[in-house]
Amino acid sequence: MSIESIELDKPREECGIFAVHLPQEADIASYCQMGIFALQHRGQESCGICVSNGDELRIEKDMGLVSEVFTEERLETLRFEGTRTGLGHTRYSTTGSSLRFNAQPMTVRSNKGIIALAHNGNFTNAKTLRQAMLDEGAVFQTTNDSEVMINMIARHSRLSLEDATATVMAELEGGFSVVLMNRREVIGLRDANGVRPLVIGELDGGYALASEPAALTVIGATYLRDVKPGELVIIDDEGLYSRQVLKPKPTPCAFEWIYFARADGILDGADVHASRIRMGEVLAAEAPVNADVVVGVPESGLPAAIGYARASGIPYDMGLYKSPYAGRTFINPNQRLRDQKVKLKLSATNAVKGKRVVLVDDSIVRGTTSGRIVQLLREAGATEVHFRVSSPPIKYPCYYGIDTAARKELAAATMTLDEIRKRIGADSLSYISEKGLSKAIGLASTCLACFNGDYPAGHPGEEASKDGMEEAKAVLN
Ligand code: SF4
Image (tube, rainbow, N blue to C red):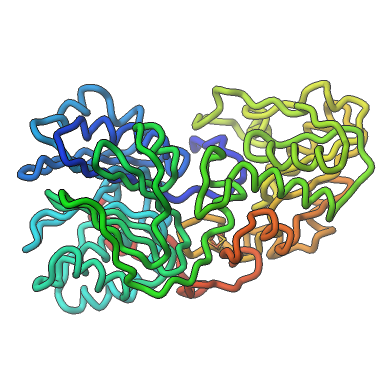
């Protein structure tokens, strides 16, 4: 019998990236550890840290959470004289399987010295580029698309690291943010659409880069600005300078505001928590209902539930309790108990007894968990359950670094609204509109491809999957 995660039915986060370069010696290993700890929600499968003192470069990476992998003993191996530069990564596998050899940062030896790279997102043309390099005799150690980029950079042997990276940036397609380093400098970049986030902070005369501002705050850095779509930033002993390599076409991922990003951040100028509250307010205006109480699905459905309650005047209450110990627990359920999995994580409170409930969640992927939550509320005495969702129906897969499940598994891709309502057992079901979502986030434009199939950075086709480069898996795992 397999061990199962009791994670609920949600899109899976992508990866978290972090980099720092300071003009003087510092405990870079601890900065990286704290930075990726603050980004743990973006990937829980593996993590890694790479540090340099200008001469020597050391790397540690493994499967597991930051707190499991980076024990004091392991961190000690990354603390050595003169360290000033570092990278960190937390990974959820969107391309390449979840195995140790795919953990990042990834390193190669080249005529530019050792290069280390950490990556968030997907290169949609990686498979084609990889095949072309294989045909020319290149060898690959992993099955993830980050190795394609690092190889491409290394092969521009006549160019500096900065120029090679700028050249390769223009050859890659998809949605991605990348940080890389050699022994003396750090480089960060975002794709032309700025699909995945990357922010810059200032610290002790030097700079740090991170997927989200929380990783800057935790090390005491001051947020400076977001890296612009299509921009390359270089951090070395001279300071920070920038090159606008690609024409910006900003369409950042709407799901960062719906669900992925930490609530305590501002990305591309849009406040994550405030956007989620507004999504609930918009939903209340678009899909009103007569009810007695508004309940959010913890944790990610809570801000939209608060917004719905505020705008509708229906009181908000804690109708669902989430076990604080169910975070990343794996269980071994027998067949009879497998369907009860959600009860290990969530239970209903008496706040819903005898009440007509508006239940607010951020998304419905397959619909399996949603149905069980509705059932929990009914078992606790809710007389009606009206489901409201703060994202539009997910109908298409994401090719830019989010695991939203295959199209045939997506409830909204295969069923009508009423079929989904029946499947989850709700009295009514409504999703926020795309227009309403955009209004709530407040940016001029965002990627909405998983809702409408309009991919702003192109896509590799339905047949592509995260295992697209797995031909080497058997010998490498
Ligand atoms: S397809 Fe959806 S999840 Fe993927 S980047 Fe676009 S908005 Fe985000």
